Amino acid sequence: MTISLRDTRSAELYARALTYLPGGVNSPVRAMRAIGRDPLFVQRGDGAELFDADSNSYVDWVCSWGPLICGHAHPQIVAAITAAVARGTSFGAPTAGEVDLAEEVSRRVPGVQVLRMTSSGTEAAMSAIRLARAATGRTKILKFAGAYHGHVDGLLADAGSGLATQGIPASPGVPQEVAAATIVVPWNDHDALRAATEKHELAAILAEPLPANMGVVAPAEGFLELLRSRADETGALLVFDEVISGFRVARGGAQELFEITPDLTMMGKVIGGGLPAAAYGGRRDLMERIAPAGDVYQAGTLSGNPLAVAAGLATLALLEGEQPYANLAATTTALAEGLTDAARSAGVQDHVQITARTGLLTVFFSPTPVTDYAGARACDHNAYAAWCRGLLARGIYTPASQYEAWFPSLAHTPEQIERTTAAAAAAFAEIEL
Image (cartoon, rainbow, N blue to C red; front, side, top):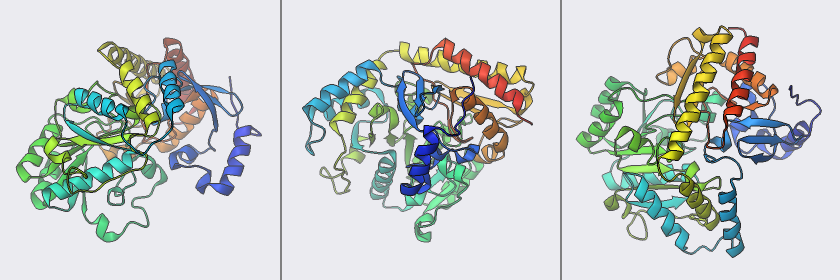
């Protein structure tokens, strides 16, 4: 099967969208400019399949960039949302579902005793940073090059994800004095971290414990332990961004996987089951600084929206116990091994690195393992773009950026993995390296 976007409904919709939306999209990476083509417009999803506006079908390895760990339109999640919407879409008042979800998250995530819901990961990041500054009386934040923590002004320095894809080192509109409060250190660089924490008085050390916004780049041995110890020794708070890894790589997120407990945790994606929801949480003494319990203000009209809460609870129920994560790990491993075999069969194995953890995967076009943002930036982006176009033409929908992760789900089947690896082998064979 070969799919073309010429003279299609997607092309017509994109032409209209360019008139009314900046760049024709509502989030930059959707534009697919990094892989040299116009975007697909999606009609519907079903399990691990996506259907575009012309009813072409694709095996979907994006899964809405992470929330859909159970796949598209899972019957139990749809039923939960349908029941919730029949009772009303928003109240601006507390509901029992919010308490249920907070209790469920606290039961699963080691570092979360109390949480506050928001509507997006960006809000969660902004709020967690405000709390860290209030709790410590300090201003500066340390983050890692290539880490994307939402479009918060002070965090758009050396950010990965869509910002890196667009090639914007720092966004216009961010005041210089705001950016100056962010200290950027290379990921996995022990010496640079020690030097920065000795030189600067920090409110927080902010990190994805398993980065997935410069591609999936695992922490080096001892690096997360060093984050924890340097925070303790300097009086900074350790803040984990588990918007992507939370409830995905393990029941309690990456902090359970690596056995490192942060002071504050940011969550999103899976927690909303495909609807807009996020949260930040942590130790009780810290979280009780948040209004109305304390003096640090943060609010949101749709925070804890009953539809999103219902979707989140239904999703977490489907992730109960060890079996779902064993299944997801098996799917991820089978995909990684299949892609490795595909690269080998096409004779490009020396130019490709595949990094995977349960529910996350990246194919780097690099001759050497990628351990930080500099390594991700040094990848052959043109080859990745050509390969992605080849996959799309064969009905395989993957991230339109070298810096984004693939998101295996519980809905993916062995047959879909076989389709993907066969398409990958053919697409590998077409590119010049």
